[in-house]
Image (tube, rainbow, N blue to C red; front, side, top):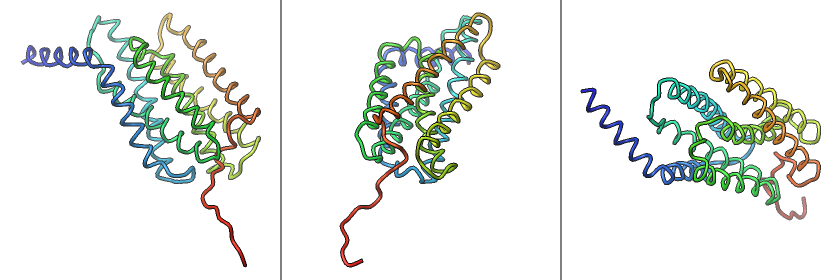
Length: 238
């Protein structure tokens, strides 16, 4: 019985290694396309529940992937976390797609360009950084970028009920608090020994993303989200 299970697992691993790029890109494309058609507006409750679910699921999977990677190194295991990697790709694709739609509704094409660039980055990561995909740096960079862009949309809509410099800065601060708590959990659950040095690098990447995004906002390169046009028209005799 055990031999049959091992044989099937070996076939699955071989299949993954042969078609990993296609499967990863396929999962990313499915997530991106799926949400491209269901994303509506920043104040839509269903959309926000879905986005929060993606963020929670992606964050959980990143922790599970790194726990598994640590155990593989300790036990010299060669199995691949196939399902986890595919689900993570799907979540990243879905988040990027939603942000693409919501930023695109803010009146400029610049916001859309960010998420098209993110999609290209995910594809390149899938192709050229595959051996690192279960590691922390690449995942955290993508995760925090999506978390930050979500906070900038959700916090003004549901917490501050206004847009402007104040809500934007507070939204960014909220994203830093969230990622700090997440990294603390990651540190406690996953990182051991010399891997603790990665916290400094990860924190640097997070701050770079935060600073760059703020610079783009104050240079008016990105729009004052979540401003969006719902209706327009020319009216007479009102």
